Image 1 (cartoon, rainbow, N blue to C red):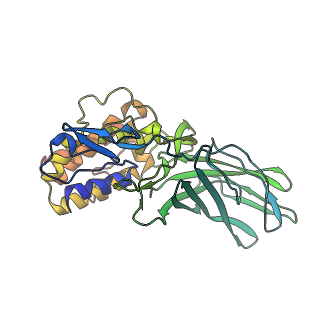
Image 2 (image 1 turned 90 degrees about the horizontal axis):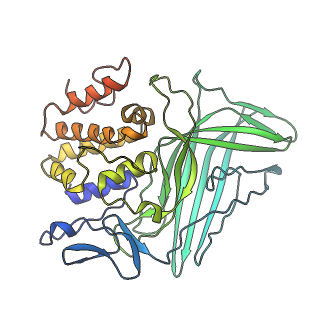
Image 3 (image 1 turned 60 degrees about the vertical axis):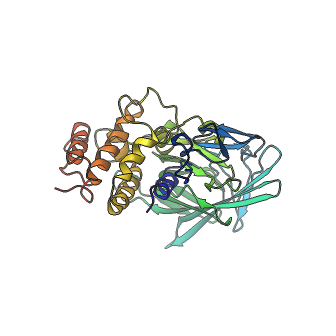
Length: 391
């Protein structure tokens, strides 16, 4: 796998749009230009009529960004009435709802929730969110599917579902994981991610309930990704912003970073000009990154240099490791030691990458030392390292 395609794949896993110039004759400065850019005097610049960060992504100044208004209403589902509770400005929890974007373009969001009745109890089995964006003559649809499973551990209340003649009452907690895809040709989804959400179903009146959701540790980005302009289109993000802490017994040192959803947009995330800053910002907390990452290497050229020296097998192994780490919110929280220490997670990834690629035989042992310092009674080697680091 070429380094460029590898990095694009990595970027799609962590919500970072990075496009490379594959022409080896061009200067180093223009090899990491983002979408909708030109190389002028060996410097990346946004194309005319575009704005943003030329290293990350430039977008049309008048591009429509899907913004959602808080307008809850009651809909009918199988002849029963339910209401919705919006989490922040984005996460709708009724059974079918439509939203229209503000501005010149149009953005429609439809939400369906599928229920499964098992032995008199109703279980949420799937939530599907369709985002259709129309801007000028462009139209794209992105589908996000949320598949639910019910938490059965003692640390969460078992779901209580009461079935009456006029209504169903849901109470309890659920784990959700997210998948998404785009049906627009040549646009791949950049937001296939695993997330964990606790959903509390609370009865308001006999025939109405609300849903409150708490999502842990990751950003859910609803936007197609395409490195080739002009097909790249904006969308909206669920920005992670406040904390809510259930118990994860695997890491008793601290609860994971669990957060409410809150809306942001493309322009809010284009001020980060390098790969690792964007990794931290988008993949972990979607909040301001402060202070700087100390002595941790924080530029794309450094990471690319390591990958160039890595075997094909090593690169593929690191992709798997990278995905496993970011899909484990409790681990991310424990290693990063809350927001001010997120740079340590980047350092952890780089240590293992060096070991996998044969550049530092002590990388895995140093990564294990970081775990031992932050996770009480940690096993050695830690489970997350076992498939990738030699004993």
